[in-house]
Structures are given as structure tokens and as C-alpha cells.
Length: 236
Image (cartoon, rainbow, N blue to C red):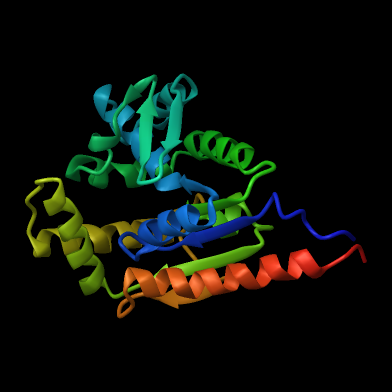
């Protein structure tokens, strides 16, 4: 069997909110010149659309119909990924507290996940890609070349998320934010559709005491090892 061509490599980074996966994935993609796939942004974009239409979160049929007529595009630059919904840039809206609270139920709608997974897999065709999310290694790309699952203490993740929100001029207490993170963790882990869990062959990375630079270096070494192996391998 011939090795996978170097032009088509998929690396997945999964984990709970504020575990460091977004920052790490974005920096790795920039360093390597690969595509960065922020799947969480896609689900958040769908949530923005649901909130726009004032659809109750328990109305899965209405959410499914809306998803089928919604166009979500990710446009990556050297510094960030911009999120477009139906031709309008809504990037600045996808991480506000209202979306944080509603994204869990939207993620659980089977039709939403079906549509998103199809789009994500198409993006990975014939390109090198860093895919970041919650079920990349278990559901979307089970055959990925490398899989990572990032974790960190709830306290550390709460502080990180508060810092991110302060940058957006969003004020929220640590106590309230920690409660929301714990609730999201529980919901993501227990949901019937693609629960949050590490793939059996994923590398577990605890980022509690790691700097973003250390997180990138750790994963980059793994990536360099497999790309070097591909360059020196021939058909078997």
C-alpha cells in the first residue's frame, strides 16, 4: 500500500472549551502553511442564525430546516479566520455569551451535524489541514494521520475564557463563566450525537501548565515525525 501523499495530511485537535486547541491549531496551520479548520466556529455560526430567527432551542425540526438553507463560509487569513453567514461577515458575534449558552443544543441536532460533517470532509480533500473541534478524531476524520486531545483544569480554562472575553469588552464573572464551562463540558460529554471524548489513538495533551508556544512545539514535533516518514517511505 502506498503512503498517503504529502499533499493530503489531516491532523485533528479535539478538546473541551478553552483547552488551548484553537490557539494551537491556528498557530500550527500558519507555521506549516496548511489550512486551519475551525469547526467550532461553524457550529457557532449556525447558532447565530438560530438566534437571529428566534427559534426555540428545543425545536429541532425548525433548526434542521434552517440549517439546510444556511450558507456558512470560513475565510482564513494569516492572522485569523473570518466567519461568513449567508454572505455577511459575522465573526465578531459568534463568541458572545448568548451564543455560548445556545451552541450546545444546536450542536446536538442530527441534521445540523450531518450537514457540517459533510462540509468539513469536503474541505479536507487533497490538502493538508489542521482540524480543531470536539469530534474531529472520533467522527469527522477517524482516519486522520495524527490525533490530539487537549485538556486543562476547569480553573485554568475559566481564566483563559475570561481573558478572551475581556478582549472583546465582554464583562462576565469567573464564577458565572466557570458554571457555564462545567455545564458545557457535561452536555458535550453526555450528548448522544458525537459526544466529546478522545479517540482511542489520540495523543493526550494537558495544557494547564503549558504556554501556547510549548503546546505548538509539542504537536509540531509529532507532525514533523510523520511528514519525515512519508518523505522517506516508498510503496510497500
